[in-house]
Image (cartoon, rainbow, N blue to C red; front, side, top):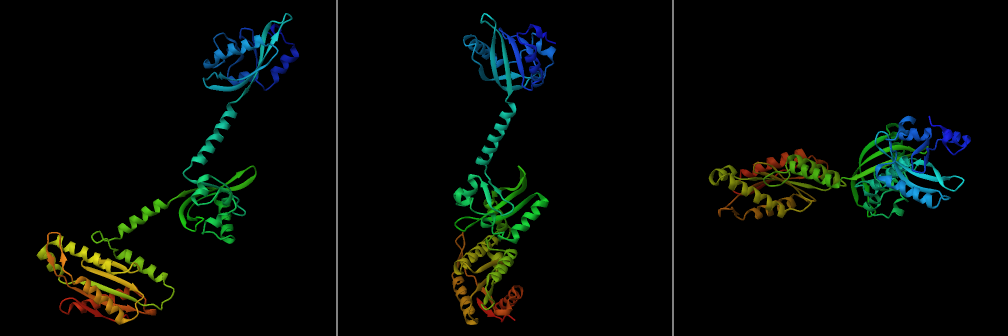
Length: 422
């Protein structure tokens, strides 16, 4: 215990220092510790006996020269307090950042005999500032759009720069919008209320959706949405990622998985999906659809005589000619081997369908040239059927066109056969 009678302070002041929560230090004119209060001991982790020993220096090594500067200022201007940021060293070795406020104590002759200092721990404040800086930079530099939303109305209360720029808005424009304005998944009424109700129960959700840009185009996104509380109020915090590239890759994989590797035409799985889309996109069942089933005559003979490489080249060229002949809205598929299917909507009647098949045969009447210089005559058999109104069953239509193709094969050379879809 320090002998307080050696200090040039009255006992009342020392008692005040003892009980105050502000770390307080009294040193002699050379800087040697005369007194520290319990708050200082708690801050630096020492006992009173430890801190008063000669080998303990509480100032961080890099700031020890600063002590001399401080004492020199106080010697030159003893009536003025010095306030300065300074580092102290905890007993366990880590740094304590502090704001030092120190004054000089003089004797009757005006000589400085002691220094009285109080320090304010800045560590928590610095950590808080660092946290705010980290959060600000993370939000500003984030590769994701970040939104703060009012749960009650869906109003967008705040967002980062990427959020509004990605959708083509200014920030002022974005803050006038609600989530249903940019996410077509929601309507302004029931759907949003249901979403918020489920969020109150689950607290966080992972959602895959689309966001609508200002120009009306849509952006595929995935959002991590959390219900958070701050200062007694609830908010929805959404971190939204652009997944358009991922969706494009996924679609490419799907397409690759469902494309014939030789001709790059859709296979049966992709054909079924595109036929379903064709039906769904049609406003009514009043239009007619033609199914043309194509088969290369004597393809086994071609493979046996010229080799499978030549056979593959013929199939590739056949696919190219079909692509060149058909419209973008038509559906083409390789069904396997040397069999192909062409589906065309908007066909008027049977003569119209036959006319298209005849034009196809003309396209294929030109000799096929192979990479090794061979020129080969290839004949085709085409089976045709036309679906009208309630006859829209794609499975049946393909089967009927297939039967018509076998009828065409019974004829010599390239030929067409037609069967009604019924």
